[in-house]
Amino acid sequence: MPRFFIRQNQIEDNKIKIIGEDARHISRSLRMAAGEHITVCDMQSNEYDCVLREFGESEVVAEILDMRESENEPPCYIKLYQALPKGDKLDTVIQKAVECGVGEIIPFESERCVVRMKPEAEEKKTQRRNRIAAEAAKQCGRSAIPAVSATVGFNDMLSGAARSEVCLFCYEGDGTKPLGVILKEVCSRGELPKSISVVIGSEGGFSLGEAARCRDAGMIMTGLGKRILRTETASGFVLSCICCFSELL
Image 1 (cartoon, rainbow, N blue to C red):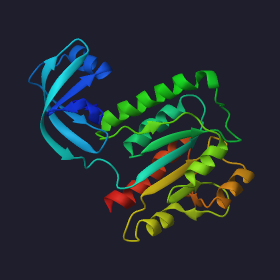
Image 2: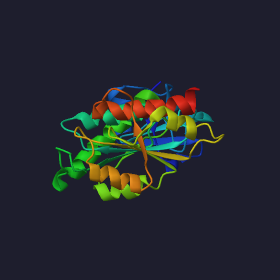
Image 3: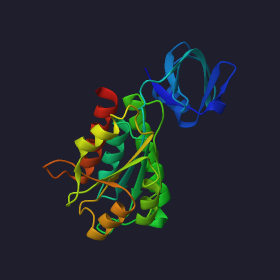
Image 4: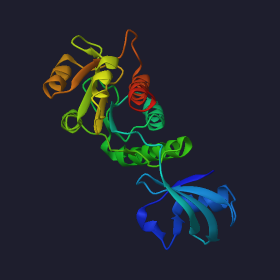
């Protein structure tokens, strides 16, 4: 069943007004008609079974038949801090991270990033990245669309990630603790952490100085196993491991 996302202010008198691109998609691309059913999510973990009733020039009105709390969101809020990779790899990271349950994605610059943020292009890139996240959320049945922020610097990443209850700094150097051991500890205390941050480096990883700063900020230095993962693989791997410990066991 087609899935669409709205804000709470679009709900009134047991009806939902769908506007903009979604309204055009329903009427023009999908060629749906009155009487057909859709699923609508309000970004507050609520899902609505709806039947289409009215079609206007710029909006579609659907009647709510049933409401339920979504079971498709993970039990803890996960922020992914991803150092800018080359080419279109970030598109893949965003798509797969959304499928794996991420709550928010924050690209950042580190010393070894080959790609650098271009301020004049950042707004368009951020809009495009959020469209990728929205499409992935629709495809995989999420009840909320994870936001993709504009690119931040290393210092902003450091201060933001360190505020989470648990912060995993993924590092291939010395002094790390296996991811499985960490997750077994934080997910077996009787209560899951409310927030987890995951920090992933670019193709060149992190410098020794960056690693030291993250360790000093209280991040947990974690290794991802005996094989070296590509940057576009690492985030999906970590998120899948978190999902296994928090949802599947």
